[in-house]
Image (cartoon, rainbow, N blue to C red; front, side, top):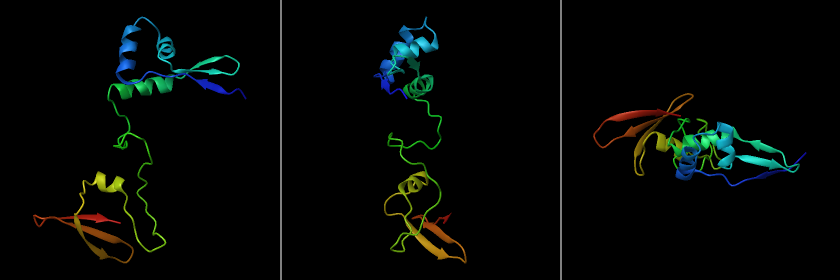
Length: 133
């Protein structure tokens, strides 16, 4: 199997500027000119249109994934499942607390049901919100 060599690709404002300059070219030619291609060991050129289109969307500030990480590094997506740790604790990750808009110091009342754990947020204005585990 031939090993591929990757080429440095344009991103962000540089990518948008270059694409506008190359308005007269086809999509594939634009992608190639912006560095979205690879060369195999045999010298065969392969244009990576998916990476090119995704880079364009990102450069325009368009997010297709509704749950994209806020730190910009990808990372894991929330699975909505947790496991009891070896010390018996349940850890609710930051992906969930951010999604719910929770802040450090927010308090909860815990009530145990037969097969569930209910977290009831205690707000300062006396209003309660339910979050079930």
